[in-house]
Amino acid sequence: MSAVSDRPPVAHRRPSSESLRDRLPVFPWDKLEPYKKTAAAHPGGIVDLSVGTPVDPVPDLIQKALVDAADSPGYPTVWGTPALRDAITGWVERRLGARDVTHRHVLPIVGSKELVAWLPTQLGLGPGDRVAYPRLAYPTYEVGARLARAEYETYDDPTALDPDGLKLLWLNSPSNPTGQVLSKDELTRIVAWAREHGVLIFSDECYLELGWDADPVSVLHPDVNGGSYDGIVAVHSLSKRSNLAGYRAAFLAGDPAVLGPLLEIRKHGGMMTSAPTQAAVVAALGDDGHVREQRERYLARRSALREALVGHGFRIEHSEASLYLWATRGESCWDTVAHLAGLGILVAPGDFYGTAGETFVRVALTATDERVRAAVERLA
Image (cartoon, rainbow, N blue to C red; front, side, top):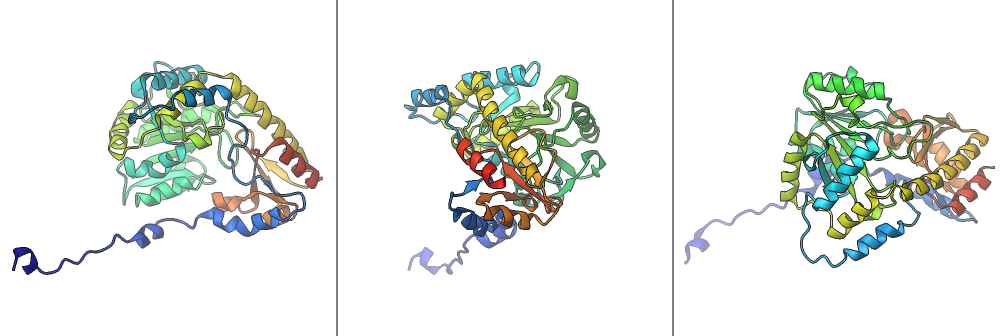
């Protein structure tokens, strides 16, 4: 008998998916399905204003860049091509007012959501470490902390947090869902406080180019950070400003001491943006004209929906930027969702973003002009 057969049988245990599921909240959008069916039954069809996914065409110059780079048989690099890094650094300086940005200050990512979800893990956070994010916020900030088994909490004013054990502070300006914008003075105060206490800031600025009643400012602006990127990283996406949600194109900019280790970790994980997408991003960041055109589309839709909602008895709070109107009728958000679903209009309930949103709904501007007109007529 062989030595192998003399060994006692090895008990193989399957990795348990239950423990991972237990770490995650219920996926909120599943709860909206019955209301989606109600709205879809409307004789004029559904007007889906629940999810902020772009509906307008990808600009031609970006599509052309993608197609021209389609013959890309080799692996792309996680750090991106030099042309991509040049495009990011140039845009950050031109659009955000940042200074002295080098390739070491930037890092392409595969869409911003994967970064938000996996950042605490990639930073090495775990039990005993704390992650904080706004009281009304994109749910993935919480998911990221849960995946890392870190502690998490929300805030109204981050400088009122206990800094002990606080390893990651998320800012979100303009905000999803509220559209609220942090002023330059507020950002300056928060950055100074975080540096005093050794707290790392990641500022989610994905809606920064969509300011309406305010001019959003980046944490990368020298008036905010004093000309230093120590302890701060900004997150930017091309999903909204260039209609590239389907391309999964985003990037980080800020402290090289943070981005360097992240780059190494992401190399090991194979977190690379496809080569055609990298070429498309170069084209997108080099052209401001298509961004202005898309802004005008959203501005027209925003004006029409805002007027119609107010005329229907809603109050709009914040919403000075981003792709959403934060609206309330002073009742349970689910009552409002049901009411609008009866009109064939689907919106997102505010409690998806925290208990503080339980009387609000989030109304997205991401519908075609024809569907927006239909919503306006129904609200009238």
